[in-house]
Picture 1 (cartoon, rainbow, N blue to C red):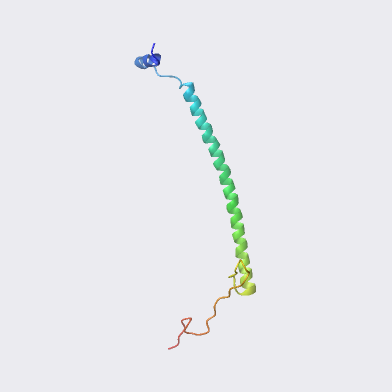
Picture 2 (cartoon, rainbow, N blue to C red):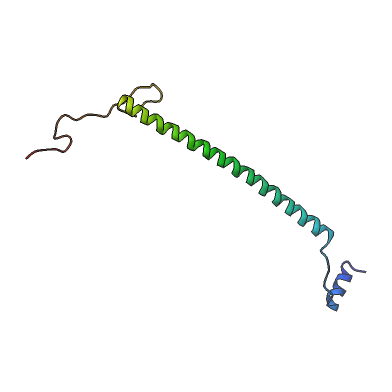
Length: 103
């Protein structure tokens, strides 16, 4: 008898299959397990990402506080982070340089 003959006969009689094959079921279950694993892994990465973003925000707030301190103490927050040198803003003494010209 030819392979899948009983399947063909059932199709001709209008009988619909009640189950998928064991091979198909195993493949489907494996795919679903892989999706579940990846979903859990993505969740872990998202939590880790959120923790890192929170830490970054804390560090940015610390920098902002330090800039405020530097402005208060030194009159400038422009600090070379390699040498610690303070770059003060250029002060213009000539009224023409700052756009204040009396006519």
